[in-house]
Image (cartoon, rainbow, N blue to C red; front, top):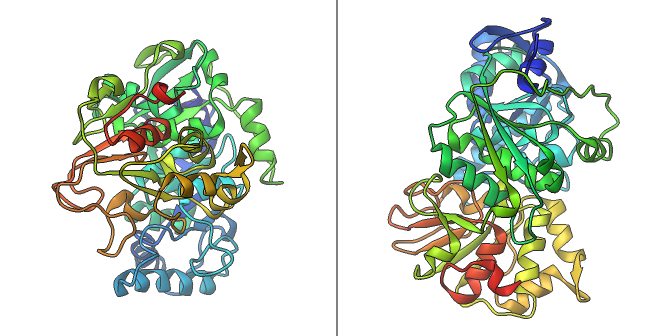
Length: 432
């Protein structure tokens, strides 16, 4: 029986030779991810259902990465983190990355693969919708709610309905002014925010080799913005090398059948894509950046699990090197590894951090989610009334970054950096 990559992974997780879309199976979960927003709720459900003295299904299968509300004076946010600290100690969890310590790593969706917790062919669930990021490395990875997570925490299993697959075929050579963000914004613009509801978005074709692992992370990260259950790339040698460089644990990659039946198929020629934005207030509100040159901006924001990775800042540094920003430009590395890269990576003998400082950007913030989702009132980079923002984040819903009256334009790091220079939405080819 011909199966897609997602179907093959879930069939193996369920101990079955084959599965079909719509079928419900009990899948073995390899990794459960949670953080400071949903972790306490998950723990509460786990203890209520399995007992106050219950042990998690696998100490090495539970990964806890606080990242959302940590750089704040908010007492309730601190209480959430304290709950995680107590639980990790009680359960003797080896993969807890607490803030304010040397073990802190940053945003969970970037930290999880950086720390070697994402492996091809495995099943990953997390209490955050952007857990679909990890399909970039050939894993089935999806977001779940606290109730499901509490059950997984106790049993290591989850009831999963096999999703239909929408195949996205990428071909052509990627120009240097196009990034993964431009690819996924175009796809979401065509599908709409509900066009892939409870489907697997499977990215395939020769164009995939044109995309770096971090570009693939960006693309899978935003699969959920089209309503998808998960996003996934077939694990090629680049993905295998990335994983092997970060973990010694064994893994068994899978590949889908290229002629497996799918719900729909779309094709994109990377060479024909243009720098773009998603206009307020929805990620599917697609427009070429060149068509939005009359949009005056108040703020630029480079960061998040979507746009705060090492390559994202490298793209921004290329544009900003030797130039000045004309609007407030905020920089938030996703993880401590990214922050280190800003201090050590160079262009023309200058570190990226120095390039950003000389360009007039606001000093680099501590790694974390920051204003990507608003947060407490003292959150770094939080928007204020009527500010027009261009951002490398993944959502531009009303109030997403703080103020309910602040319009947000989503864009690549290249487009965001170019726009920070002019103060208007700008196609980055102007500076390339």
